[in-house]
Amino acid sequence: MKKTWLLGFGFFSISITWALYNAFVPYFLEDYISSVALIGFFMTIDNYFALFLQPWIGSRSDRTHTRFGRRMPYLLIGMPLGALFTAIIPFHTGMATLILFMVLMNLAMSLYRSPTVSLMPDITEEKRRTRANGVINFMGGIGSILAFGVGSVLYKAHQSLPFIAAAGITLVSLFILMTFIKEKRDAPGYQAQTAAKPKVSFRSQLDRTTVLLLAAIFFWFVAYQGVETLFTLYGKNEVGLTESQASFSLTFFSLAFVLFAIPSGWLGGKFGKKRMILIGVSGLLIVFSMVPLVDSLLLLRILLTVGGLFWACININSYPFIVSTGSEDSIGTRTGMYYLVSSLAAISSPPLLGKLIDGMGYWILFYCAAGSMLLALICVLMIRYPETASPSTPKGATADLS
Image (cartoon, rainbow, N blue to C red; front, side, top):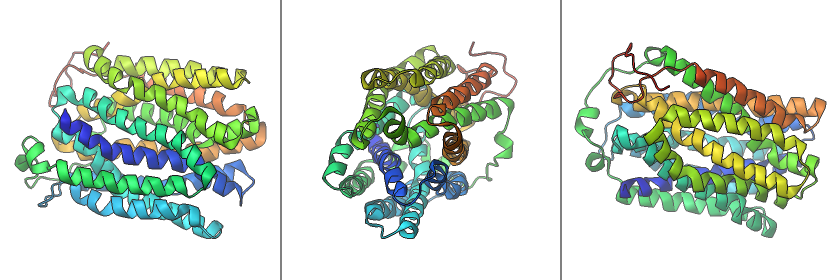
């Protein structure tokens, strides 16, 4: 478990960077663009690169064999570049340089995101992965809290300070991972895993369970990505919050997620990942439906807090679930598939919701998010999978989650 906590620093740096990006970059774009739809588009244009890079790199890392390990070479290249481009985003000189820095930062992060995530199942046996995912997401949630809480204070002092701090944290996290995580030592059966093996194709992984789960992941990320990306603008223009109040309000969502991350992993291991996901999707559907009905900052933050608890039920259990439906040889490939659909959601959600906001107003944001959660719920309810079986269980097993 000690290694899991140390590995959590990789998630910590990723989470703090993405949270800052989603919270403050829309303000930079707003200086040049008046359309919310266009802001949403430019906030996701980088994901077009991630859409192709992350699945390919995840699959490629399954077959990488170096003295540093399978995943670590991608971290050694991507994290320093990601830190550099994160730090220079606030120093753009116009819209063109802002977009350039955004794209370069996200390209760099695409190099190491899937390999970093794949390290967890690499060094953790299957029965402990849900709890381990709770631990590393706890670390990631701490990063989000710092981004929204401390980040809002730093932003008020100078808009560049949160990004410079995130870059420094990324470099420190890389040093910790390099020092304490040794794949050849920590990953069970590392030599067997890295022996020459045929490429695991995406098509071979697309059974009924995986397709339904990927569809559910897509729909709940459509809801989550749209809300996370556009919430600060929603708070400013619909609720009448200041920029710092809007960004700080997201701290309540992240704090609740952090507090429930480890318990959610424990509950998922004890009662089943599907059951916890169902609770989370149903609860977040209700929360998103209620947000447009409140105009009080206190009530809004209470709803965000409850929403963070339900998001933990979903997010902590979904990645171990999709990994568990494949073999140990397909961990990187399935990690890439997970980020493929989440990137598709990130690409489609903010510009689509932004277009609806342009035409109907900000109130439509959370109703659309609730509708997307409903579609995710339907997909999860259709899943039948023998969760108690090992990942190598042959297809057609009759055991079921329900």
